[in-house]
Image 1 (cartoon, rainbow, N blue to C red):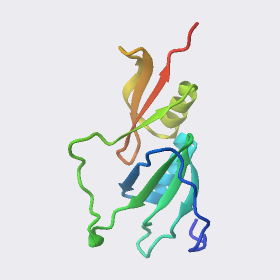
Image 2 (cartoon, helix red, strand yellow; image 1 turned 45 degrees about the vertical axis):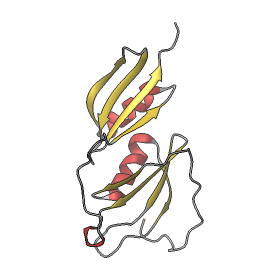
Image 3 (cartoon, rainbow, N blue to C red; image 1 turned 135 degrees about the vertical axis):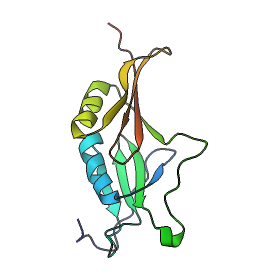
Image 4 (tube, rainbow, N blue to C red; image 1 turned 90 degrees about the horizontal axis):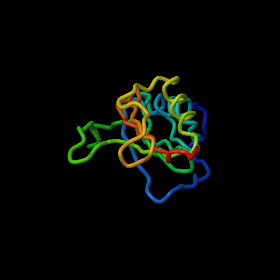
Length: 142
């Protein structure tokens, strides 16, 4: 993981809106997201002397997710989210497989996967880094 060259080909940004998360342990989070959500790590900056990285670029389910470690000495300290929920939403026609893979990898169920009042199957999980993931899929006709 640490032997990647400093200069890499530019990774393609997928999707129209790209979430960028700061986490404690971005490399561990990337490894977890690969296992839990089938992420592909397409770019990263090598770790500094403290094991932190300033940038990892992932592709998940046709979209981009970018993550980095906190850098309090550069004004990027952990801050509790205010005025919004830090929740990533993942939609899929094969929601049961996505849900089970995330649980098997170590996500904790917040709201069980179920048919909701709006008519779709929806559930919420929390990963080991404190990020909430919601999954949603239309109910399949019988």
